[in-house]
Length: 486
Ligand code: GLU
Image (cartoon, rainbow, N blue to C red):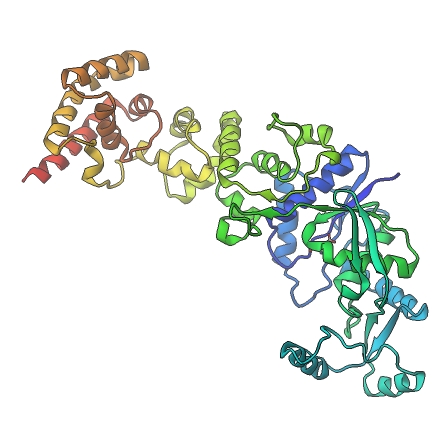
């Protein structure tokens, strides 16, 4: 079988991480089968169309390094790949269904439909949705109504009996009673634009899509799509409804849980390889142990038989963990260029040399690139204002901390020339002399030098800013502590 799959986003909003997962699985499925991956833009909802959302589709996949074989910006045998440019094929398809008695024109005014909805919502009617008033009009009635309303919509004649049945690649046999499908949904609107259902089915057929991999939220639509394929007399593609992506609370992933659009993840400093790696594991696993995959490796090992039915839980902490790993693996030149916009935006005027030297220190600590400015800030100027209490270790007071820092001053001389082990040895001896723990010596020093309790490795940081600057900062900390003693 010629495998052809598609990602079919509607450019109405920013690319959601769930959509990225759908696209990635389609792409990997195509690659694993030697097939083609197609991008089709489902832009028939002209009111909600947003050019920025279209641009976001291009930008997102360029950033991820995922390319389609056919798409709007890459010609193929079934162009155009914008649904808005395929209008005539939908009109022809709707006409075909009218002629084969699978669809009909509906002349009901929006006022009538509104009133019907209002009545149904009051619970006065046992039927929900369209009441099929125009389904069985006589030819004369139709003629008459057409004179009054020359722009009817076209509705599908949902069969009243029977079931929509199909075999899902992941879920197995899926069956839905035709009676439970939305009664006679609109296929072609009065502006002659198709609805999602018609355009989607017509294009999947015309573009010879062999497999439809999409999120489980589309499952209710698929029942209707099955009926449409039957009405046209077309062969069904293989459907595969991917598990939903949930937050930790079991609810569909949404803004309440954290970032959801790809652009937000980019802005927070996730690397594309971390996003790809993590997203690939949302509903798919290679085996019980291996977690790290590059895009290229995924292309080789992806196997749709290993998709999971159960909902996938989006774990931000795990994504951070992946990202931290990829940051550590990133080569310095690339990391520096990735960091540049974050550093610049934070107004840190470090030169390339300073950044280069600081890199090994912060590389170990960062989970997201957005953390870099905070980690780097102390390198290029005095630490930001910090609360004096931050200097004082637990179970110690200001006077005791002054003694510690006074002792520390004696160890700064020559610190840069000694190894970390040697330095640690000396600070340990100081702590013993003061009858306290090493941590109670290093913590006030860390806050004095960097302004924060979490910082890049301490000795490395002092070497970078220089012993003199470190001494000045420790002095300033001592003054700060003294001022609390009155
Ligand atoms: N345009 C639909 C969307 O926005 C496509 C759904 C499908 O894959 O059929 O997701």
